[in-house]
Length: 273
Image 1 (cartoon, helix red, strand yellow):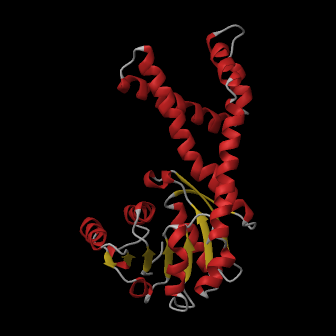
Image 2 (cartoon, helix red, strand yellow):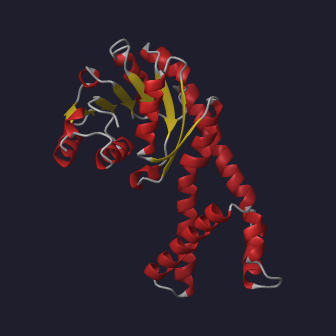
Image 3 (cartoon, one colour):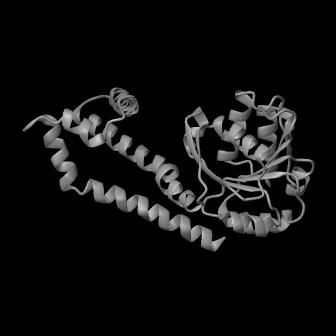
């Protein structure tokens, strides 16, 4: 638990709201008024205030006053101006956690003139407590602050710590952008079901249970996906016919290229910021 630590969210967008919701619903944060969210839009502040009972402000500087944990949840494109505004304004004892994609710990430390920084990359599944978050910390982050980081990220799902920050860019491409790739595959499966004559509801239910069951089978058996695939692929059978079309269409290469393109874009964003 985080006790009575005050948490400031810089940015009240979708991902920031998801994280805040999990912290409140899991009781990691005991009282809503321990959270303050800064957002430039008055309407957004009012929405968050009324829905969750938290405190809000349109001033980033006001938000970080007295905060023990500052969560940076802004778009990479505006991070530069946000850091310039907050430079030397965050308490030296505070922990800064960034969920801004592609931006290095060194850039965050320099931009904020702050030593204790954790860089993370959560994905959208944090909304239901099944997120995947890889994180890395600067050398100035204390053991207590690392513990606080784990408590926060475990409320979102599975967390993985790495000493090599290079893995953050790779996890962004595979785990964060990867959710979008999975949703596209699900959408294509559902559309195929509809094309065959199923209702959209039937196609969606069958697709979701098929994918969920396949994932759970891998978790429980810990077998290589090729082994499991071979188990359901009979010579000259239905699955073999479908797999042939997927291989002919270059599915492996397309997926690999998509992940590598996401990695390249992540690195570009880091260079821009």
